[in-house]
Structure formats: C-alpha cells, structure tokens
Length: 207
Image (cartoon, rainbow, N blue to C red; front, side, top):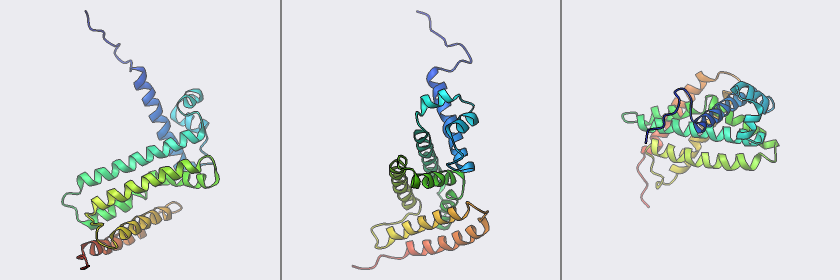
C-alpha cells in the first residue's frame, strides 16, 4: 500500500486550530497590557489576531473564557521564565537570582495579569476563576523561588522571608505600571537581594 502524503504547505486542521488559539491568546495578553479590561473586547482581540469573531467564539465562547485563558497563558510563560532561570542559575549567586526574579514582575506579562485582577475585583463572573488561577500561580512562584534561591524552609522564618520578597517584587512591578521605575527598582532589588542572601545563609538556631 502506498504512503499517503499530505499536500505540502497545508497544515493539519488540528495544527491550524492550535495556531489560531495561540494568536488569540497572545493578542488578548497584548490588549490587556496596552488597553486594560475596558478596552479589550472580543472584537478588538479578534481583529488584532487576524481571526474572525466566529472563529474566536469557537475557541472561547465568552469574554471571560478568553481572558481567563489569556492569563493562564501568561502564567505558563511566567513559569517557563522561572524554569529558564532555574536552568541557567549554575554559577549565579543569590543576589543575581533575586534581581532576575524581580524583573519578571516588571514586564508586560505581569501588567496583563494585573489588568485582569482589577477587572475581577468588579466582575462577579470572573472573580472566582481569577482568584483560583492566581492562587495556583502564587504557589508555583513560591515553590520555584525557594528552589532558585536554595532556601531551606525548615528553618524558622525562611518561608515568610521568601513570601515577603515575592510580595515586594510584585509591589515593584505595580510601581512600574504608570511610570518607568527601572532606576529605583534596580536599587531596591539589589538592596533586598543582599538582605535576602544574608537571611538565607544564617545558620539555624538550636531548638
């Protein structure tokens, strides 16, 4: 029996569908980061992605479905960035790792997620989904920060130190939304990274 070959240049339907979904998610993230929730309608996202409104609703029946999936996409990208940090951290000290972690909260991925948080505060249908998603993202960010920083959470106070550091990083990311806060962020991040390194290298107190 001869081998069935697919015409060159024609992607399988599943691949085309996956590519369409990817374009919609990326367009939704860009729209959230640039225009906020109120300016990010399904129509605007579809036009930006070059996809018909019907095809958009085939993938995401509601606006909430689209933007919740977009933030899940953001979360996956943030996790991938953390994994890249983990893979590259050989030879990097805690200060360098901590500064890199802070920078993850200063870019468009965090800005897009922030817009959805604001919308969820006022949208009853969206709030439970975003709350559950962010709880999961927060747990993963904490776990990966512990690994990246070689922290021992069995030592009293270390868990709270890591969480405080991540809260500070989010705060610096928030300060960067309205103005370019890069100079102050670099100074604060460097200072915090040094404090963090000292806190995590202190020997455990005898029980």
